[in-house]
Length: 56
Image (cartoon, rainbow, N blue to C red; front, side, top):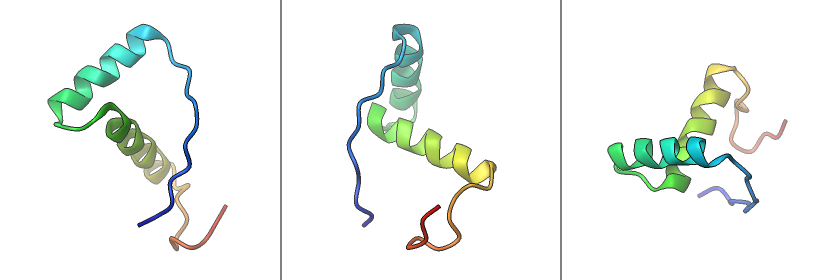
């Protein structure tokens, strides 16, 4: 499993509520939903490393 790095994210209340709702609809935690969203965006933008050990 990849090592996870904690960090603080400041986000407006309405956006956070929308993410919480989406997470609940998908049976994910809010944190899990944010990770999924970020991963999906990186994949679609072609910005994920080809190799899991590779760093950008």
